[in-house]
Image 1 (cartoon, protein in one colour):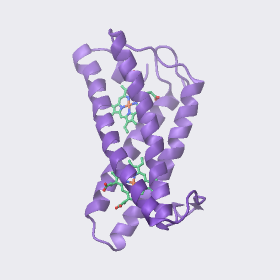
Image 2 (cartoon, helix red, strand yellow):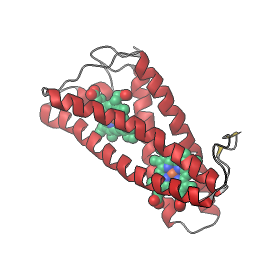
Image 3 (cartoon, helix red, strand yellow):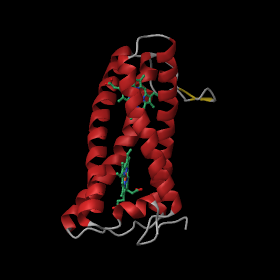
Image 4 (tube, protein in one colour):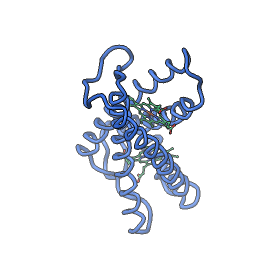
Length: 179
Ligand code: HEM
Ligand code: HEM
């Protein structure tokens, strides 16, 4: 079953969800690594991988958003109406954060005067003029968004584990293996 139903997530939503998770976890870890690596060969490899996968995250989120708009959203399995709204707001926040974060990264690099290539295959078009002070602003946005994103992911994952271990419902199972 490729598409979602009112009860279950289809294969495409599940693959996109877990692919995003693994790439974003790597991006957060890679970003922290960038802060401690000394300038040199290894750092430039990590920077270039970080930028390429980061651009990939942006397009992955666009695809996810389009797929989500095209699909049913499986019904909420908890018992509290308020928690349903909280969970929906959190999902929207995750989408917004994962669009802002790569965009801030791209704008930061370009404003500092560095090109943004994707795995050496394509070059992103220039979206902003060269201005180190603007680069500094995007750098602050990139750092702050990373922290908010990490916190949102922890809350989101904790909620999923609560559904599984405390409420004993199928919320986590249907995202892991569907029906
Ligand atoms: C989901 C996407 C992304 C995540 C989660 C992410 C995460 C991070 C994190 C956690 C840091 C460390 C921040 C700090 O030290 O305060 C960082 C640094 C950095 N990121 Fe990203 N990033 C993403 C996308 C991008 C993209 C698309 C680019 C550029 C095309 C980029 C370029 C950079 C650069 C150049 C640094 C080093 C900044 C510095 O040392 O001032 N990032 N990123
Ligand atoms: C980068 C990390 C993550 C992001 C950005 C993310 C994002 C999302 C989003 C946007 C949804 C809403 C459904 C959709 O649009 O596809 C969702 C659903 C879900 N996520 Fe995550 N997620 C992440 C990590 C995790 C982790 C680590 C877990 C489990 C421990 C998890 C468990 C779930 C579950 C169970 C649902 C279904 C919720 C429901 O049916 O109401 N997610 N996730």
